[in-house]
Image 1 (cartoon, helix red, strand yellow):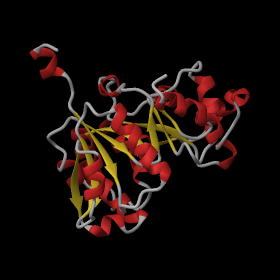
Image 2 (tube, rainbow, N blue to C red):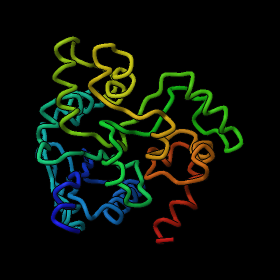
Image 3 (cartoon, one colour):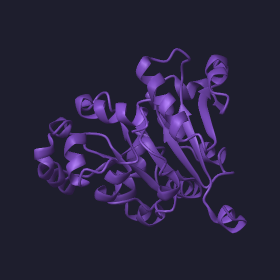
Image 4 (cartoon, rainbow, N blue to C red):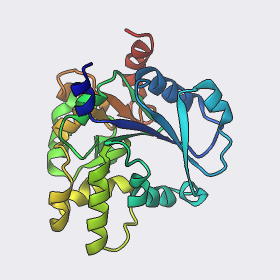
Amino acid sequence: MSQTESETKPSVVVVIPIYKVSLTETEKRSLRQCMRVLSAYPIRLLTPEGLPVGTILAEYPHLECITFEKTYFESIAGYNSLLTSADFYRAFSAYDFMLIYQLDAFVFEDRLAEWCAAGFDYIGAPSLHHPTYDALEETQAQDFAQALNSHRVVLNGGLSLRRISAMIRYLKIYALFYPVWRGNEDMLFSQEATRLLPMKVFLKTPKWKQALSFAFEKSPAASYSLTQRRLPFGCHAWERYDYAFWKPLMAASEAGL
């Protein structure tokens, strides 16, 4: 890579939130895949102060830790509060982008630079809070598309790419108009960013069809049909929503196929 290319390429940090050191087998699998596919980037464990993560760091020397107060990791509300704080993003202001990678995510290939260059401020897997659309078959793809067209879509934060400067700006402006956000953090950056009139211009998010190429969450088989059977960069909640669909695809990726 030339010096000019290096200077213009966006910098991105991968952030893995954990609140405990005893990981499940599926969490270990998710972490292993992240380290295999995204090892070219700085990867940070996001942990509560005092969490003894030495065993994880010994297994993956490429990892480093960044810590915040324990209260942010004691509940979902605490985590939402952390990720809707401008100070959280300021802690990563040395980078252009942040990839949040919770340990129920999985990435298939390194397309991270491609998505950083896509021009969005926030990207996540399109999701609907309707159990009807949790695990539609590939033959039901048009039902899923119709639902995504007719409902307000959440771009899930569990595997999400965020432009750090845009998030800081958005949160600062939001605080001028509205009270403290109490809901899920990803709803603030997707549903509310398109619903609230003053905020629409401050965060650029993709349409659901574009976001599907970034990540699947619910109804992965139907999503696969809607992307003309091309796998996304990654997926979220793979064990929860139609693991039978993901099982052979994940195994092939882990085998380098």
